[in-house]
Image (cartoon, rainbow, N blue to C red; front, side):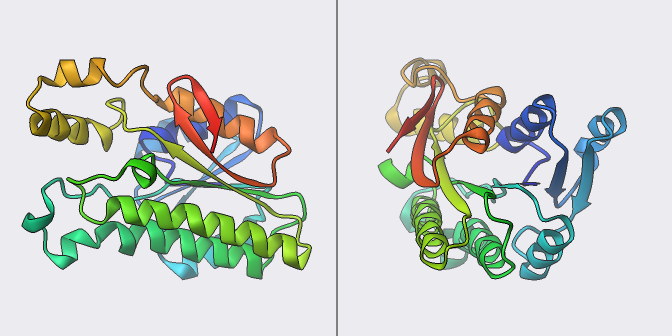
Length: 236
């Protein structure tokens, strides 16, 4: 089950799971972008809904009991300096990304998912480096990583056998979310966007993210956080 499957890195993860031969439940607020893919691949099932809705999390997990749950959904932050935010814009990602992660982890542990199941939470490299033009984004992403750690500990304490991991992808110009941020940080640094991108190294693409999630889904780690770069996963 991929939550946030319709675009960007989530779309890459969805396609990678399908290519690996797995049946996939793709969850998105708007499943329209996935309609053609679903029409071509009977292994793909579409479910529409707001990922931050706790009722959706409980209902879909109980209905499908996924062996792998990938939590990728999130809101695009407003790109402006701290003092140009309101509290509402600053807290956007806390009320979407962090809330979504809390709801799905909670339901995965309460249900619980089957022993041997794996939950992979997509956080962000901003959780390590900060993100001064994104309001509360970096803090929200750091909270996602901590919640994944907490859920892994609770699974171990209760003997549930559910692995919980987190992935922190670096900022990338290869997605709709990343491109505006790259442009904003280039302008802040006083360099061209091309110069800024050249200094970032190999980008994290949807294909790179897909390969990383397949690797973690098929691996044996039951906890931990991983930085995702254009070259792949690095344990933190």
